[in-house]
Length: 491
Ligand code: NAI
Ligand code: MG
Image (tube, rainbow, N blue to C red):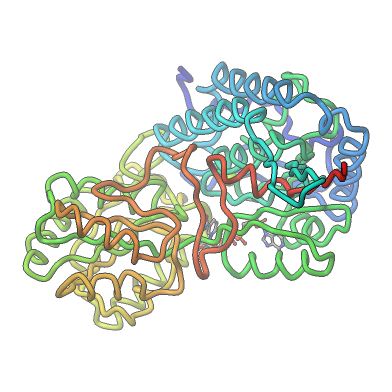
């Protein structure tokens, strides 16, 4: 156990880029100060990389791909290295949890959950590396046709700040299992766990240049990476606006992309649902990670006959929620940065000014530093489906309640935003479970549940503005590779 979470970074500890198996600062020597969201205080720094650093990293990844050490290594050996990295993460789990928690402000138990999920990704993709098969295809007489799954080459992964360790793991696991090499650009607000895991990858013995890490601002390092002609495929998780910018940059080189762009995910509660089972799940789906979760359940749609009961029970729970420092391990931590705090508060005040009913509000712990970026949780009731708060991703602890008349009305409301990432359906009626699951436009639908502890094995991704391509599970291995068809003539 790390006894003092604020001691997780040693005085002389340096966080550097990892390029071609070596730890290096930005060529300009410039750095970005790292602040802890719980108190707003600086505690270390990361490289402020620019196009020249990105270019070095892409060249290293290209050389590592072209020398074939990785892409032509037996798949089982690639898998063993990924599994070994998972074991090293497990051995360093308390340090990594404390680091993630201090860097992002998330409660320490969430940091621990993130380490456990990251470890599972390396285990899963380590085991999957030699289990992806091509096909043989019935073709004309005198021919044999078959397919191979080949790596794209150099993959770029641009990672957000909300679950850096988990999102890095799903990208690294799938991309490296298929024989690609990688350049990872973590978010400027949360790069520390990515760098530490890069160091553990050196320890695990990955060949040089297979996994490169360059930190820096999106507008510098991120933009340079997305536009680099040496990148063969890109994967991004983050905001739709940045997703558009990255796709436009990738289009200048006609490269493929996987985009995971968030959501406005609904949970539909029918009158016959097990409400006691649903309540804690409904709350957790928006409070976990302070609501800074792409799959946050930010809309709850309630059948009219039980609306008052469910809204009342949720209000009781919301009033008891407390935000506070990561090491106090309360219901939620601080927002990632001052801009995110202001953004969430602006949504709340605009909704209140528009006359939307604020049903309940949690609190901020009395001992939480005034310099931290805290927002207390908010529950809005009887929200008009066309309201801004009903349509836009807030990315904070703000839940909106709606009422519906019947199944068709519920599906219309559930599908009535630009997003389509995840949905929850609460009902005991088996036929309805199937009908609604099929008609809701979302990449994942949960019945009498929501989310699934990382969901490593479960394909994940969006419809509509939530993005395209799929991560997690075996599906990600298809996105991280391209089919090659080979035809033999033997007549
Ligand atoms: P962002 O989407 O801009 O940042 C995510 C990543 O993209 C970071 O690594 C960033 O450095 C990089 N990036 C930024 N601009 C770039 C560019 N022009 N080219 C290449 N890479 C670039 O998100 P940001 O600004 O941190 O947060 C703004 C809003 O985005 C949040 O309030 C939230 O609504 C949403 N968001 C959604 C996430 C999700 O998981 N769906 C994750 C993070 C943010
Ligand atoms: Mg940070």
